[in-house]
Image (cartoon, rainbow, N blue to C red; front, side, top):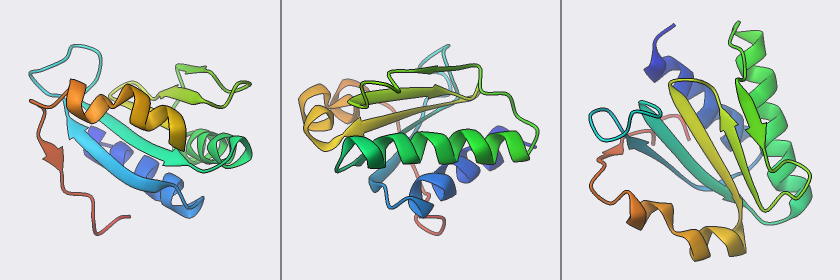
Length: 116
């Protein structure tokens, strides 16, 4: 499966748990960390955790290993490292504070509207 398909799987998992303002940044040539950053948020700790769990489960169903998951217990900013895709799942308040979209403003936004 391609990194684009992995991205779309993560987008669908986030959307299934009603994540808000889902944005994918194409990081190819910009960051060595991953090809895509997926950024979204939930409105409660439980929702943020549910989004992360769903991403992990969907990745495992397709044979992908989640390399790392950080911040799950606090549920303010959960990072899910899927290899070529790194998902940043924020609590609404934290997302506006860290504003990763502005930090990585030179990265093009990937068209994921048909998936979300």
